[in-house]
Length: 190
Image (cartoon, rainbow, N blue to C red; front, side, top):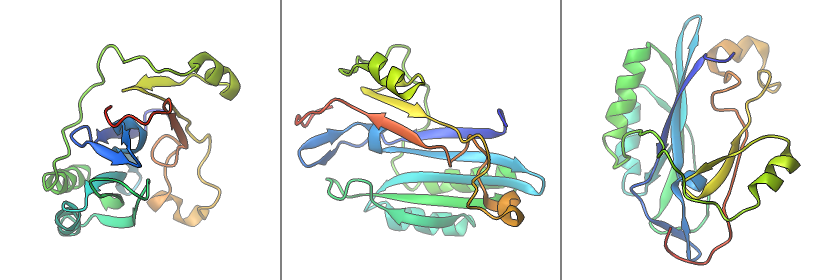
């Protein structure tokens, strides 16, 4: 299934978010994304968008106007400043129409455009070789955190076969478990 999903990272690098006196790095808990996958009857877009509480009503209206469903609304850290929400999105349709709808929704927020990662990453004060060895796979440094993205080898067993063409995620899209960690800190700067 390699090459079947186009994934766009949308980390909220524009925000300074503090939870319990700790600054949250964008890649740890503020990393939104959108993933597009081609199916026999159209394109699916799924994602998780990170929005401020003030942006939430505007993006909700824009997503609904574009025909993009919100399938979940939740918090990651329960306490943070400013107040942040995570909203899952899903829709099926024409690729360009979906992309334009998502763009108009994102325009209601201050989410910065996707950009390539810097050529050099800041060091991570963790035993990354030990973590790699323990997990049996290689992680990557990303903005001061160390992360893993692990694609499922098969479609989700909890999704009935009859429904998979419409809303089950291909292995490398959104159903991939991922792990991110950072050194402990009580500093409020990132």
